[in-house]
Each structure stands twice: as structure tokens, then as C-alpha cells.
Image 1: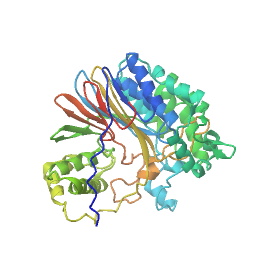
Image 2 (image 1 turned 90 degrees about the vertical axis):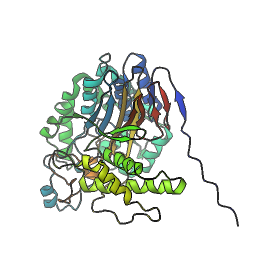
Image 3 (image 1 turned 180 degrees about the vertical axis):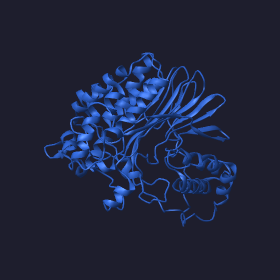
Image 4 (image 1 turned 45 degrees about the horizontal axis):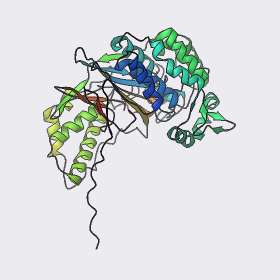
Amino acid sequence: MSALPAERPAPVARRATAKRAMVATAHPLASQAALEVLSGGGNAVDAAIAAAAVLGVVQPMMSGLGGDTFMLVRSASTGVIRSINGSGGAPAALSLAWAANAGLQRLPDRGMLSASVPGAVGAMFAAHGHFGSGRHSLKALLQPAIRWAADGVPLSPSVGRFFKQNAELLLRSDSTARIYVREGRVIAEGEILRQPELARTLDMVAQGGAEAFYRGEFARRLIEHSRANGGLFEADDLAQYACEIVEPISLPLPQGVMYSNPPVAQGMVLLEALGILARCSPGTGVSRTHRMVESVKLAFVDRNRYLGDPRFVSNPIEQLLGDKHLSARARRIDDERAIVSIDESWLPFGDGDTTSLSVADGEGNFASLITSLSTPFGAAQVIEGTGVLMNNRAGRGFTLDASAPNCLDSGKRTMSTLHTYMLCDSTGVRLTAEHPAETASPNGTCRSSTPC
């Protein structure tokens, strides 16, 4: 009888160091744009904006002007951390009553009925106006994205796989197919993706600001496209959009204080799971993994029971992250068996995708940003004449169960799977990104699973 294999050691993250700044993104062109901004005197927020704009061009299936963005920003001068919520609500006409009259059991996960008001542009302007260095105009920060959209960029292998896997989806809409399909097939790895209409929209935003996007030419085109394709968007849905800048939620841990985005972001899932784990014995090997899985299960149960748009429902974050609740949750974990009976009354989320990035500059400013269309290619609807691919956050996120905190309502924002985090101690930021393998320290040290 053969012996059991030895337990595998944990993977060691790649380590990089830098003297003045650090960037971690999912694409080298986005990292290049951020580094150019930093080299030109910009700060971490400036660089994050430039990188995010490029990601929307070179990875169009994941993010873009039609999606949502959440950020955590740490100011070097004050040490204060702020959360930016760049998510949008459902159109005012999209309500439980409307869905019932339409005979829907759930919202569609593609098409214009699945889209919410895009908040990424609002987040971009909020971040730049409140936390940018003042040394770079937004017009300058968007130039790399405009250039790559106009000139074109070859599809990387990973992006090419997304296009191949979603070929049927991209053929459904004429406006979408016109961008991503050639001679009856989606473009493939290595081929050049040119997006001149998106370049014009990016330039319009660069010249005209958020006003041009939410109240100007883009808004007009979105409403026209929505009406022609079964959507419910009207002018006020976009004109009334406002990005939020608020205090983050936080939890003291032995390693420092962990910060994340408050509702509508699901940052409490991360904090609650970590809080539960902190109240368990450390464990090793299988027992440690078991406790991690169980703590996440319990945190997701609480997410489903309590989280929703705070403008519509109460979110008991202080209680969920309080010692009494976390200790009670920790006692639910049995090392001999898994929890199999959990609240599944509302679990609408399926597979999704997103992209995140982190930037640290030489002054000690940090920006951690996550941006998404919700699922690959979002609503699969490019707004005619704009090159902007819409999100499907409403269709993927809302439930039609009137008793659930995340039920659909006019103008309501769905509870979002997007969140980012920062772990800070007395020396500064120890960890910032979306993935635990990525870290940056105040002196510019970074361990990252993405290119630095």
C-alpha cells in the first residue's frame, strides 16, 4: 500500500520591490499607462483611473464605461481611507409591479432589462476630483485608453478565450456584433480589436466630463437604444445619478485593521469571515481549510439575509461584525462535519467576472479599485454608436422575492459582489488588492499574482 502524499506547501507569491511606486493590474498596457502617469508626477489615484480606463478597452468583456466601479483610497497626508461607490440603480420604471405585470419569475440576465445605470464614469470623476493629485487632467489620464481604442490592440490569449466561449452571445445584437464579429465569427486571439466608436465616447467624456455621459450625447443614445431593445431607461435615470464617497467598514484583526467597502458592496462578507476565523483556533492543513470554508459559508448566509441598498433597507453591519455575533458564528463550526443546511432562499448570483488593480505611489497614497460589467460581456448590448458595452448587474443581482432585502425596486441598487480591501497597521498599508496574494507596503514592496 502506497503512502499518502505529503501535504503540499502553500504557493509562494512572486515578490517584486520598487523604490518609488508599484502597480498591479491584469494587463501590461494598463500597468504601462499607470506607470507613465506616476512617472509624470501623478499620484496613485490618477494612475488607477488611467489603468482602469485602459482595462475597459483591452479587456472589454470584464469592464468599461458601461459598468460599475468600487474603490478604496488612502490619503498619505491624513492616513484617512475612503470608499467610493460607483454603482447605479435600476431604471425607475423597472419595479416589482412591472415585473409581475410582465409575468417574470426573475429578471433576464442579458439584454437591456438586465442593465442598471452605469456608475464607472461617476466613480472616475469622483476619485479624480476628490483624491487626484491635481497635476493631471482627466483628459490627460484617458489618453492611453483613447489611443488603444482608436488604434486597436491585439487580443491576448485569455481575452481571446472569452470571445471564443461567448461567440453565440456576441451574435445576438447587431450593435454588439458590429464591434466584435468579423465575417460571421468573433475575432480571435492575436487579431486586432479596433473600437473607434468607443474612442470617440472616451474622448467625449474627456472633453465634456460626467455631464456629457449622464446628461448629454451618451445618455441620449442609451435611451434610444434601450427603447429600441426592450429596455426601460429614461433621461432622469441617468441625470439623477450620483456617486457616493463614504467611510469604509472595518474590523480589527491580529494583523491590523481590515477595511472594505460598505453596502451596497459585499465587503462585510470578507470582514465577517475573517472575524469568525480569528475566533477559531488556527488549525493546520485540512482543519484550517475546513474552518475557512465554513466561515465564508456563514458570512454569505448573513449577506443573503441582511444586505441591500441602504437607501431602502437597514444593514446591521455593526451587529454582524460585533464580537457577540462573530463568536456565535465561530461556535457553529464543527471540525467533524460541514454545514450543509444554509439559507438558500436567495442565491441569484451565477458565474461572474471582474478585474481589479492596486497602485501605491512614493508619497504613500494607495488606491485599490475593482470594476466590472458583472458577467463576461455584461448585458451583451453595445449602445449603438458609442462602443459602450452595458452591464447586466440588475438582471444578475436582484431577486423578485418581495421579502428579501435585495429585492428589485425602482431606482434601487442591487447588492454588489464587488468590493476591495486594505489591511493597515501602525506602519501603513500592509495589504491592498482583491486577491490575498497581492500586497504592497509603504516602502514599495509588492507580492502579486498579477503583473507589476
